[in-house]
Length: 165
Image 1 (tube, rainbow, N blue to C red):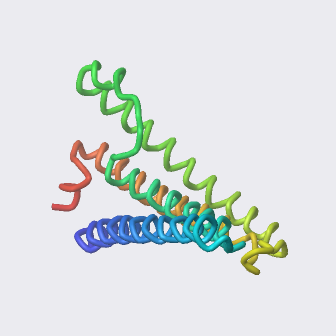
Image 2 (tube, rainbow, N blue to C red):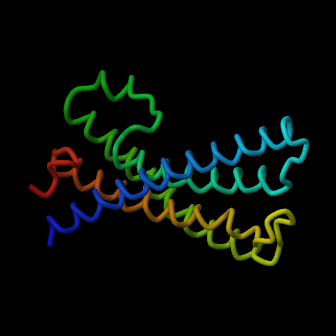
């Protein structure tokens, strides 16, 4: 069971990184098409900017969640790195717990935001504005799960990759 949880977490992180990569490629293609259409064809598509923005919101939010698990997000560790073993563990534990609580806040208020904006329409796409806010609770849930995994690893004195081995 423990090994299955670790594998699920690892696969979820890999999946959102792939989704983010594909989203970045799609956004780049949309922007390239919009620039080409504007300057070469003299007929820029109205939907391009909003579609690229919607994709960017999705892939950035999901990549941020993966960053929590993989540790590639921006953080300042100068204090923790210069503390002795136990103090460093406590600081890391508190840090991961705060990130997890932030993830839960993203779930709570992200659901509310998506719900409140669901009736609003993005005119150029014909889609609900709520779709722009759906990735907030999804990434919040992932952030909470990934931070919880780090908290458990900190308590056991292990790295996340070796947590269930």
